[in-house]
Amino acid sequence: MKGLLVPVQVSLTADRVLPEPALPDFSFSKYLRRSAARFTRANPGKVIPGEEAFDLLPPQRVI
View: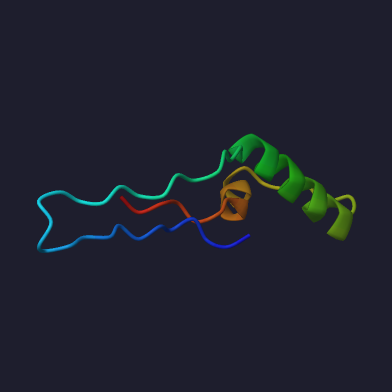
């Protein structure tokens, strides 16, 4: 999956900003579960510490 950063198109001649394209539905909980499952398969017997779980999140959108 590519990054979730979506550029906003701005035209200096238009009187309004063009809308951003809609992002597909994305479930962070599903992403975290899959990432955790991949981690535990790669590191059997190891538990993900709380703060390190956030490193598995994809990059956030910049608004």
